[in-house]
Image 1 (cartoon, rainbow, N blue to C red):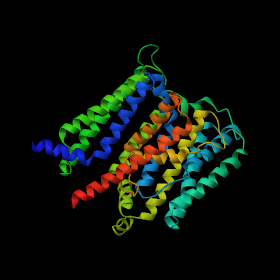
Image 2 (image 1 turned 60 degrees about the horizontal axis):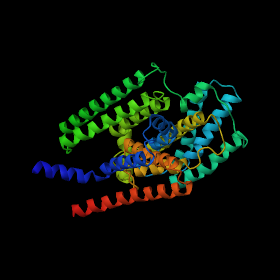
Image 3 (image 1 turned 30 degrees about the vertical axis):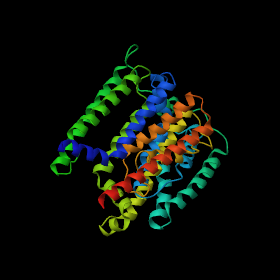
Image 4 (image 1 turned 60 degrees about the vertical axis):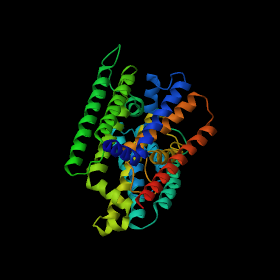
Length: 393
């Protein structure tokens, strides 16, 4: 009886995270039924990953910014600007595309450093600085492209956004994808058990073992199922490998690295973090440099996917990235959020877009529904905080 009460108490405390995964499952099942099975068709799952990859990439950087208590409204314009720079470098300056990609990441870092300086060292709120950046870098993209579109790009560059890893099978399930899927599942299991062992060592573990097993098993089944779907189509999208590497790296940074802990500390209480010895200005500056690099990577991926550099690229990307972060469990006031949560939030946005498009829902209703979903997610977060505060009294 005590074990059941303990488990129930833990699950109640984790209602926000559990509700997020339940919402994802319900949305997938709903669209799977209403679209007559198209949602989980292998080709649609592959397209869903490729078409939403740049939003998921942006969400990884955005969740770090929001955890620190800031916001970045310029990412869509930076996507357009770095995509424009890639177009000019490759098609007009004839720079080899791998070098052009690296240079675009450097450009993104410089953009982030420019904005980070004004925010961290000059004390201007991030909302104002990045709003100015949204306007400035949109104009810069138009200037670089001279208000014209640039196309086409080399095959290798396009593969970053829409290509697949080499296929080693002509029938059945593509073996490389299956190997990667089972490897990812194995890493997930090992990481989960090692993390639990570490928390138990320091007496920080409160998660019931049964729930831990159920949660881990669900993740493993999900990874293998997606691998099966991809393996039965064209295999593994290259951008999925890039995205997976980013998720692993930034999850480790936010969970285990000093830099990640400092970001959480600043978001929780910036003054207390500063008094504790955290170099808040330096961390904030580096945070926006990182956001610039992430935005540049999203710009390269998006440009390669479209095989087109356009002045209007990236419109609204900042809204989708911010929505993904908040739907994924980040707190409006900062200090709370995770990289995996932002990815799940991005998937919810992507599945909503995909499912409503298949059903022929108009763009006006799509915007209305996504707005209501975002409002519901934030309202649920506020409700949980009030409930937790009342329980402590």
